[in-house]
Image (cartoon, rainbow, N blue to C red; front, side, top):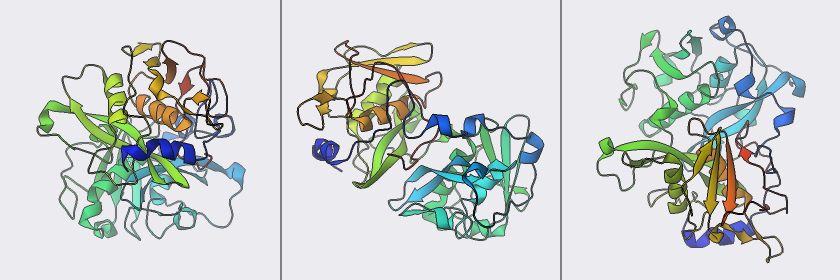
Length: 355
């Protein structure tokens, strides 16, 4: 999607009302049990028993979990779905990634599961927070082009839980050192540092770069969502916060699907180096970060821009919230006229369908 269409999209999209001062975005923190604070016994997570779900499940018997599903453009995207509460939530989450399985009736439009149909799964989590996932023989029945997406989906779905930092895979009890179809190497345990929807545009020497994950806007005008994309930036880039902002301004790259865009205008600039203190990063932009308000006159900071900034920057270690100023002034408002004087924290869940 071209940059020339950005501001048109901002004015055409019905701006979400979930971003309010001092609160998370994209979901209601007060009414959910987030994965990060989910408590379950380690021994239960290590069980290999299949979790069967039958009939309707009452709302109080479910919990919001991020499943990394594949959209129609081929991107791996977190979608928050309410899954049945269980002591084996890690295994349950993976079972909802199996095609034709439990997730079928819950899939958002134009999304699909990634693990081959009829695959049986068991998972064990050790004291070092390594999840070892064993698949049945059906796991080999996938298309070569989807191989890296399957790895990313499994890794990012499992590592949303505090009890899991990395993932190892096995097939019928035998450790996998490469994927079975396209032979993608698996070197040690998989982590989020391996990236997601990796984009290497304009990278000639990947050994002199480092990964940086930012969130662009994907989907269609009437059903957009936030898509994590791992870019490669120079090892010489000392300020990862400024680098992430720069990648959002630059956009997803020429090789990206036309569905993917960033709404930060090209003439937006940081006037000062980002300031990180006590988990909060403060960004001071020029006035070009403003968008027209719903009345066409008032200058506001669009929710989609703030969402992308917060999601991208809180991916970085040690950053928990984002404060935005313009020309050093902090008396900003969003599209609904709500104050943005307080820093914005990362949401508990991404792409909840509530925006």
